[in-house]
Length: 123
Image 1 (cartoon, rainbow, N blue to C red):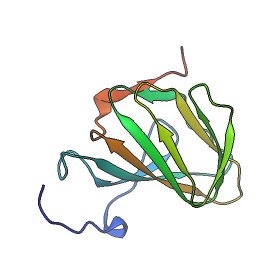
Image 2 (cartoon, one colour):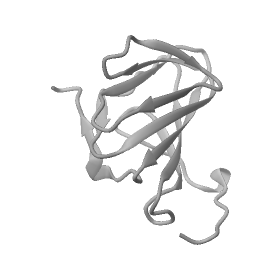
Image 3 (cartoon, rainbow, N blue to C red):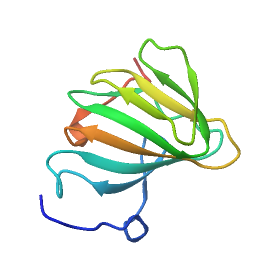
Image 4 (cartoon, one colour):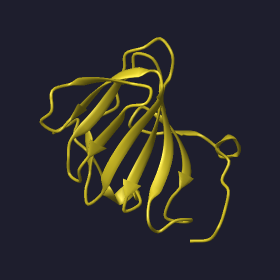
């Protein structure tokens, strides 16, 4: 890893098949320890059921409100300032229940790689 400042406003946002928009702030190319992405989910949208194999994840909500479903936990409302801890291999999805974008950081250890992502919607 090298010292670097990555400005989210200068990094292109892209839409995922998961039904959210992502800005990758830090990851395998720049940080072998952790990946950090900003996720944005539009009002009324639910991301697909998925899990990350071999990767733990944290959601840190910075704007909006949602309903998160994680593993065997009861569905729970989340708001700005909340954190959601998601162990590896744990099914997860989130719904934007508000009228504005739901925005949260996804922090993954080890760094997220597309090969760890497993869609569970069809299972």
